[in-house]
Length: 68
Image 1 (cartoon, rainbow, N blue to C red):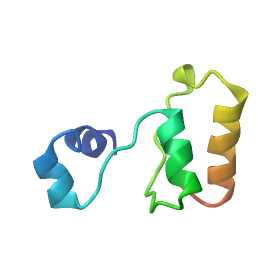
Image 2 (spheres, rainbow, N blue to C red):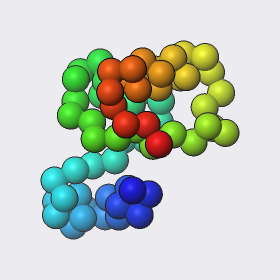
Image 3 (cartoon, rainbow, N blue to C red):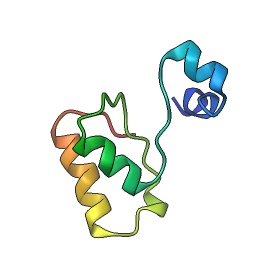
């Protein structure tokens, strides 16, 4: 999963997979609020420092979104 996420940095891979990578809690929050089709949330616990960020992750996991 991480390998695929890294590959999405290149436009040719985004086009190939029909996917893109959203980074940062604000951008992820906006994507969730706009009901973007999210495949998985990749979470780096050491970088998630705020309670609202953790709440977002737990809320999305509770909705059945895979969080790794």
